[in-house]
Amino acid sequence: MRKVFAGLFSSVDGVVQAPNEWQPAFDEEMGAALARMLEGQDAVLLGRVTYDEWAGYWPASTDEPFASWINGVQKYVASSTLESVGWPNSTLISGGRTRLFAADAALTPLELVSAQPTSSGTVIVSYRRAPEA
Image 1: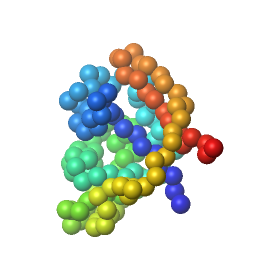
Image 2: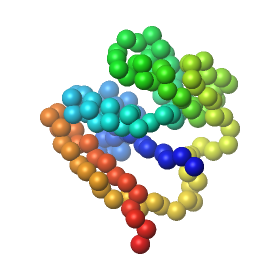
Image 3: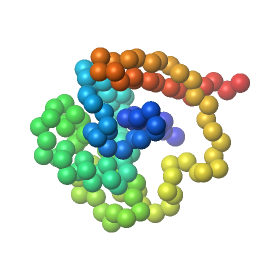
Image 4: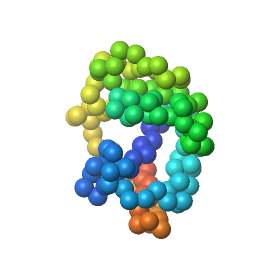
């Protein structure tokens, strides 16, 4: 079994899509945190919308070092509407669930590992699974 790490840009009210519309800046501290997260990953799980956006941009991008990393890493694309994926190193996961975990799955308690405010006012927070009591 593999571990799943979620790296999300989330607003205070829970919006996780289109951070370019509500996030004012991407500062050096955020870049460093993202680099640390990517160092430990050997695959990425994408939904259809993110896949469509990224597959249209990153293969031709020279925005290093992320372009080299994302183009080379194995990508799993969860979609019930795509029939195929053309971005190299991409595998389509089709049919089945609409959620990563079943709706009736037990909640997993988390504990705060760190909270780091950045120069642009963003807070980078890390959680891990809480030890079982």
